[in-house]
Image (cartoon, rainbow, N blue to C red; front, side, top):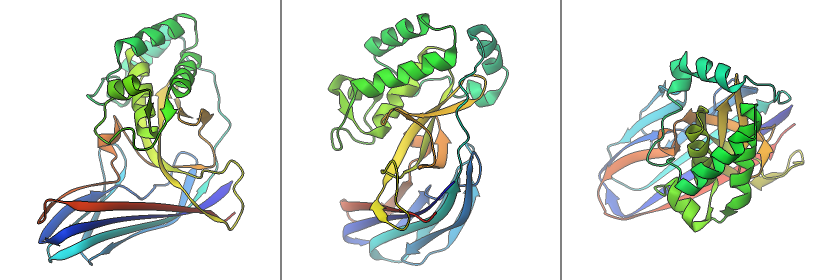
Length: 281
């Protein structure tokens, strides 16, 4: 078991005065799937009313509006989470049984369709078909596909943006965790394996020291269904463990963006994001 304290600070500085803003934040984790949320809180400045709800995909959402003029908007999400992941079980259904099981529930069917962000390039689809042809076990095939993508892609912050598609990232050969996850989703879905986007946090140290605060990461990884949901981090080529904290799930990044909104006022603003993670136990 690992206990992590996460502090996620987001700031918007406007080039002038915004007269109003309307926003949704997805920054607070929920209890479930091997993690227990001990405390969580979202502070917003300027002070505003806040409405919380759980969206269609099961993610906690904080909806708020700021109607007073303001030149800066800041959000500080603080959570303490105990994470205890069970050992990965690689046993899965065969291809025919998986097809039947996937078609039997909306939860899986909805994660089969490609989105504009996940649609894979032809080269990746061909690579996926070649890997799948070597495996009788869909879970083993999914793992090899994700590893192949992670090994092919260079992790390079700034090489892509939030609207970059999987095909564009593949052509560049570089991107961030969002891009690598979109590629994995597109490849797995092209093989008939239901797969979903997971947004959360990752402690960057393999053996984090207790009491030491480090610069953490807002992170993304993939889960595929092969008789059960199995999580894998294709960016770091590791299974999901005690360093990963889940915030939300969806079809792609657009379903779980940490902050989404609109404002009235200046045409330009500057975004700053800081994530700090401390292992407490």
